[in-house]
Image 1 (cartoon, rainbow, N blue to C red):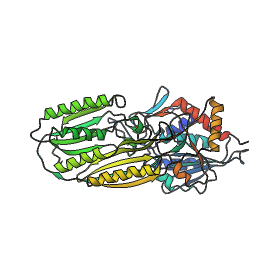
Image 2: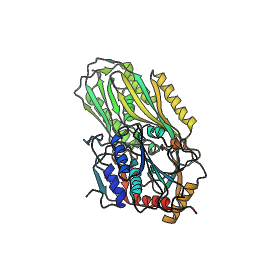
Image 3: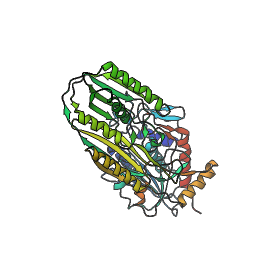
Image 4: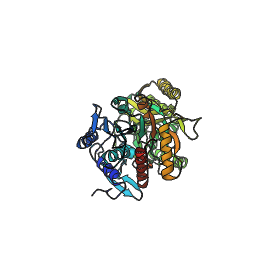
Length: 483
């Protein structure tokens, strides 16, 4: 029996457990794509699989529902593969270690992949059900949503007949999303020079930060580990002479960096113990400053057994100056929707190599011109330091529309089912609805999902009772007949 065999709804958690044993990092979706194809073949369902590994599965209407308008189910098959520092799992080759923690489902030491394994589990359970009464169901499952949304850009939807879409990539029960930010990524590259220098090597590490999704959590003021190190080192240079050897942190554009490390070489005139004490003092400052958002923040400095060449004095200044000067975090709040971040920028990946520094940013905005303004600023600041900026993987916003028949229908069903109102909102994170709106004429879409917490981090968890309630809600939407 599986770990989740006692959870309800059984069919949903059975499929979730199956797909959790299939590694599915972004851009490595061939195995999960083949699983979906095999699922459709075994059940004799019409299906399509393209060269990017996107999959579309279609199930014709059940008896009595032939005249009902089709419903599109939509989600993505890739997941963010973050893990704790002490976790040895190879997430490109090994499945997840699931466990139940009270009302929550988690994975040991890693992200859970409920974003967006929930969509797969829901859709597969619905397509597999012999008793569900339904119109024609059309399931779109895309690749690389978590990186560049390349799957949604590439997928051919010409075989679809529906224009009512349930996107199953939301993470808060009771909220129907009706709009989201657009965005894109920017890679900033700064050439650096190195020169031999003698001195004590010190390794600094910023660990224990909360991190999180750069769309959903960017407005919570959580610290970026790489930028904390840049800030600390910039401050220490006023009193301590050193050169930078290495600096790295983060692995995903769309995740707030939880851990980062740096190595420096101290000048002969600098006391090692004094430098380490200064770092300890900086830790105390940061822990007070980020007590509410990053209570486990740790900043350490240890002697490193290293002979690596350091950057020149000028390159050290350029690296730290560039990181300090570039924008980060919330740039503007929405003037139309209270509490919604309009525009933000996140430093997801920092990597200092032998001859260059690369800073990889994710930029989001619900307003196209505001997005471009941040890109312009990244390019301008970069050029001032002799760096270049390459913008890529852009995607459009899903613009909020005031009138939506499908959303109104879902809201009425929710009210009848739970005795309360469905909250209609927009979010700062990116969804594929904006791209698909350009592919499907008159698309009427709504995004829903169960409660999840700390997605894109090893603390990610899925609420079990919420998963059942939202599945019941989805079933009611599908079984609902127009009058």
